[in-house]
Length: 276
Image (cartoon, rainbow, N blue to C red; front, side):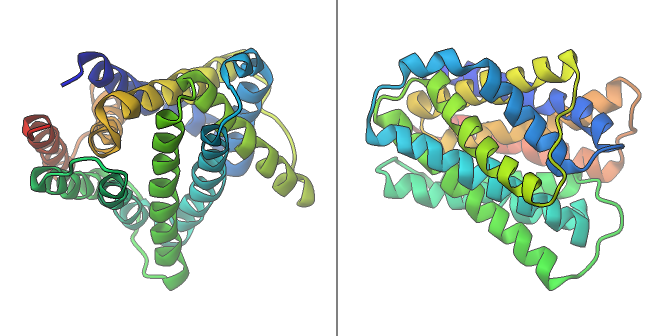
């Protein structure tokens, strides 16, 4: 396996796992859409020089589409799903994107072994056990939104693969994703009279780590080790979040969550042991 690609995807998972704590703090006083727009805004405003790396190609449009599908539509319906049915229901349904991504990887010519399918199912199980969403509620609109988020995320990740095979630089992929989503989110918030930005240097730095470096590392990983394996390995992120919360005393780890951690560790072992 490509060591650089594996290191990149695990680093992206760590970044995505830890920045959530800063975002959560701001979500206590601000709407989730405002927080989402703010991180997109800082990346769009501060990373524009990387556009010099984006040569005109079909891959550029794939990167743009990925941003709209994943960071605007996918994230928005995921937050809505959490609101309607709780995280304990929304998270495992949405994380079926890992399974759907295996199918799209197969369509793109990657070798998707039965062990990778097993690994992706273990990820969904693990996330479901780890989820802390409060009381689960049965709501058709919420469940449908979570399923829609899964489909949008898988399509968006597939678009990252298309951008990578077209030779778009990983940092350009990251920037174009953030910029396209930022424009649509700005229009949405402006139409509702809620357009504002979190004013914090620390938040701006976290946004650059998250959607700048993290997204670029993920795009690099997709190019080097493939969409199928990358989507499985980056899904260790919820586990890292829970382990960090446990060891820093923010939240205790319940027996159910320990079982979820075990399922994700097993998923990684199965994926890493799958023949490439």
